[in-house]
Length: 210
Image (cartoon, rainbow, N blue to C red):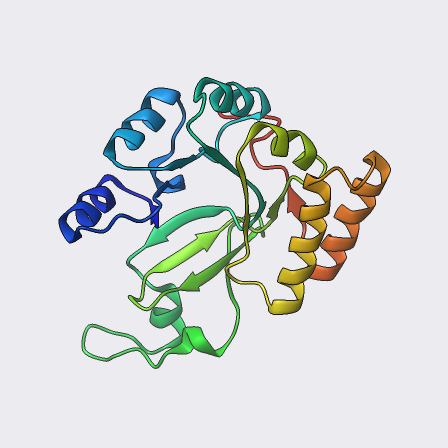
């Protein structure tokens, strides 16, 4: 179970469930005190904040000691969640008096800002909007180092097809085992970008957050 907020721990305890619980990105774990608080609440692994840079990630994982850590190395980066559904409002005919026609199931949708940058928008069964960075996180070249620091590396493939998913998994699994040299890692990164038709970003890995 991915626990993205404190209430998730309370709910699982009330239900009497004893699953493996990952303290997820929604908790934005930036330090070991936060991770250990989640461990005390029942978490069996902690996912590092997506805002940590390379040095911070390394220090965070080391400071956790034997408590398992997880880092995302590929996939969509969440920007915002909203109860407002722009797809339903603009394309689905949704109003205060009329239900949405389900336009979100008819294709791919993007929000474009004033600079022309596009943000993918997906919806869930509760008509919430999930807005993502226009570029996919790809830390393929950094994967051998991260594999040595963390117990689990995450590939976020929620919106990928089966063939794309299989290729990404194969590539990162080999990278995690040291199966590519530096030149080959760069080549594989370019190959995945062409396959997926998306641009890649390193996120905050090299720049962090001030």
